[in-house]
Length: 294
Length: 346
Image (cartoon, rainbow over all chains, first blue to last red):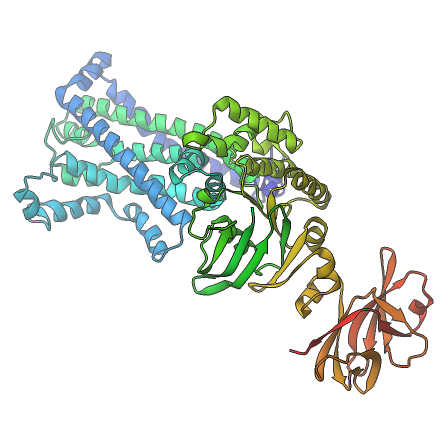
């Protein structure tokens, strides 16, 4: 919400606003520290990634990306994202819908549970799947008897990715849906819409920017996830290596140029995500303001 | 369409919001559900709409039992306090929504829906605003659009939940008159919820006064105002003063003095006397009257409101005098209620 109080204090010119009590020196020091930190820890590495990627020229770069193993890693990453992101959109919308629009026992517990993937180390999430689906695991014998392969194969990678990226969409939608309440849906139902029509014509458009924002973050994480995927993947070249895993393998083989070439793709993805996220925030912020204006 | 609410009870997680409520709404009637917050008026409206299901009891639309029907099947027009307009749709799309989501033979073409939306916009006096979005409208305009949207489906009953609650006083009065005109023109059976008695008494054919999950009284504005049937209604509707009294030998007493009101049919014992501050006669010689010391005197618009302390208990009551009445200058005033009612003390 654009709080008018805060807005009126936000200075649009250089003059010192009444809310700022720190001296000019203090402010300068704080800003320098922040910029220095961001420069050293974020900007510099990003520049180095691209510099190293192109260290041996464009030709070497395209050649590194043309490698069959690399291409397979890119394909696998895209496949994993293409499966896990839509599933998490569905899960996220259902969870947000249940939590925001219904009253039921255990709601607080469910809300906490949704945050679990954020609070647990991704490596642990991966290990859980090994314990569950591995040869010595809980379901291992049964899976083997039925010829189902999950661990060290694409299904395991997808499962681990879904687990790690689950909260993004749900967490984005829950506060938004809670704030909007049931009024619009009730209006749609009273006008004769069935549940599906109410969802499609009313609920979804009301949350579309929030949803897109969640999808974007979910996708970035799905493509970039390392820890959980690393545990369940088995690192089989050309088969179960995603891009982040492939980067590590190449680097460990002292193939820095190729490693950085693949890394540059991931970095590029991060940059695109960042730009889209900023654009969405600008758009989404206006939408929220319009909503509150009601 | 006639609506009959028969012995409806509604509980929210064991907490009763409505106790055994029955109400007959006549076809074409404009009826108000009036009560303080927590009286169950909105719950009753939502039960009629089908947004809630009764814990017990039934709701009939005409002869048909609607209790088990969903809100879609009941075909009601519901107008929400905060409009609930679809913010991403234009005014025309909002109004046409109910027609657009229809299936089967009643489905209309896009052109027909547009024409109907324009017709309704005309009816609510907003022609030309078809392409606007809700955020570009004033509160009063939004509520008109919400009403047009509810009427587009040709509802059996029109239900309005505090329709003017979020608007400022000027717009409220304007919309009140406008809603009455629309009702007279279209003849929809209409139920609206309000906590504003002025709105209810002015607008509705009949008023349903509710308190604590029960219907206290149903009647026309005159009936409700002139013959309240409970202490609650007397106190809630209009101005009122009350005094603890005693009934003995068919006379009303305050402490040990009869006050000149005879109540031959009232039960003996403790009671509460209610009267309207403006419904009093001043008397010179206190020979059977209520006498009190003037505690305060306020000018209220065209009259003077005098607060009196009565008897040893110093009970305070208010009476209304003409502005230039000499009694307002005196330190003691004696009066007798012209119209009054006794309720046995609880």
